Amino acid sequence: MKKLENVFIVGGGTAGWLSALYMQKIFPQSKISLIESDEIGIVGAGEGTTANIITFLEDLGINHFDLIKETGATLKLNIKFENWNGDGKSYYHPFSTFLGMSKIDLGKMGWPADKTSSTYFNDDARIYLLYCITNNLPLDDFLLNNVLSSKNLSNFSIDTRTGLARPISLNSYHFDASRLAQFLRRTGESRGIQRIEGIVESVINNGDGYITKLKLKGGLVCHTDFIIDCTGFKRKIIGEFYRTKWKSYKKHLKVKSVIPFFLPPDENKIVSHTNCIAMKYGWMFQIPLQHRYGSGYIFDSDFINADQALEEAEKFMGRKLDPIRQLNFDAGRFEEGWVKNCIAIGLSYGFTEPIEATAIMMLIIQLSLIQSHLGGITHSDKFIISRYNKFIAEMNDRVMEFLAFHYITKRKDSEFWKSLQEGSFIPDSLREKLDLWKSQAPTSLDDHSSVPWEPFIPENYLMVGHGLELFDTTAWTPQLELMGIKNNLSYNQEIKSLINNYNRVAVPHLDLIKILKK
Ligand SMILES: Cc1cc2nc3c(=O)[nH]c(=O)nc-3n(C[C@H](O)[C@H](O)[C@H](O)COP(=O)(O)OP(=O)(O)OC[C@H]3O[C@@H](n4cnc5c(N)ncnc54)[C@H](O)[C@@H]3O)c2cc1C
Figure 1: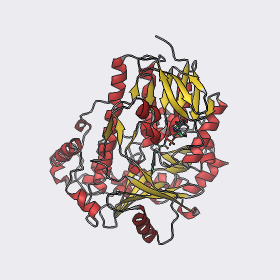
Figure 2 (figure 1 turned 180 degrees about the vertical axis):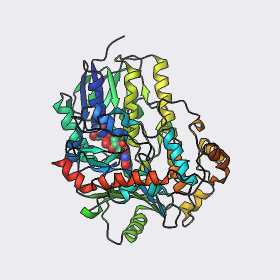
Figure 3 (figure 1 turned 30 degrees about the vertical axis):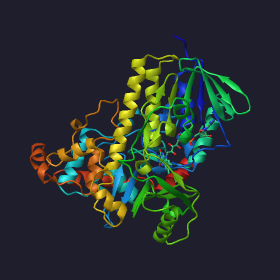
Figure 4 (figure 1 turned 90 degrees about the horizontal axis):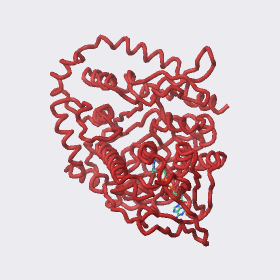
């Protein structure tokens, strides 16, 4: 079998440059080149991330402080969901629960140095959540990231010994998507990744489907033995050349159109959470950056058009808005993300919808699985390829299921919300869980999938489901009594005083950004 020599990444968005940097790291002997086209450009959307980006960037040797400086990044501790039941109430979905957090020291590179921080939640966290829920303790006051972000604090304190900022819980980032791609490009080029400006027009294969050459507009031909297709919604190779089968999620995820717009920055409003506000025909995101607010209305175009969406958004915001464009998308994924000697990563493989900012999270997971599956050879075993495809497909389906869960609300104030009330959008696998949770609390045994990582686990379902008031916990009483956590308030004072301590030492969000940018 032939070793990887000439790896080509086609596409220079976040997926392309992260793939290039990752491939260079795991296959240092291979030549890594990236072809991208300024004429086509990048999608430029996607300004929220999840916590797995922290350790992934660190593994790539990317300095977090540089990232914050160069991409206008802010910290993201959680997502605040507003008005999803139409009653004006809100709830948070944080990255770490109080007991699930770990203390981490700053490394030389930035933070966190301690890899244990990749543990989002664990059994303790689930029990802690159940303890709060069953004893009617508000999660806004009892989960550390929620407490911090509601006070616009960061999750960092200053170490009095070293004077360095150190995290006290897990966070992620918001950043400017275009600046991020440029930052990653500068990093990649400085590490010797060759960038070729051009448009891939066609590919040549060896008769067996393995691509040997990429032909660019203008005549340039690039010889290759492995390709990562990061061409975004163009899906140039995986879709156009291989014509892989598409699996649509449109039955389950209904929003399909977006009008993005920017708002000017307001120093007092640079919050440490993403706002997700339910609207009449979908929802609005508000993402705080250092230099602007990235915002947009994501709606179901079966019910309204872009002009109607704009009218509703302007009324809601009480101001004129200037949308950058209208973008339509199909929720779904390919059946196979890896075909012959090509793997599709990022939007080229698929897209759900942005409610939990999962696209970059999933592309990181996809990349992380490459090393164990590809092993540096061009012609991998059929079994290995099919196992990779199965893992990725199943993890995407699990994400889709969790995103659909957010739409089980009490809202009936438009045809859109009324259409969701009858429930046919709920995937069967989710319906099974909902039935199960009528009689018992979520546990890690509820998932039927066999994947290396479960993207969303019972703790996530507990926090969102509780926020949506979906659970009737009276039926959980015997189980919770057995666990010794029902009607047991003995920990409350201790927890409150711990949280108060963290509250006292946490640096205000904006101050922290200023410190990290110095
Ligand atoms: C409304 C919206 C909101 C989103 N919000 C989030 C979010 O909050 N969090 C999140 O994680 N994700 C989000 N996403 C997804 C996010 O935008 C993408 O995951 C991320 O930007 C990576 O995109 P990409 O690199 O796959 O594609 P792109 O950024 O579109 O890059 C595609 C690249 O391929 C190149 N290209 C295309 N065809 C060719 C060709 N023939 N030859 C050469 N080059 C070619 C282009 O020039 C470009 O460089 C959102 C997406 C949308 C639409």
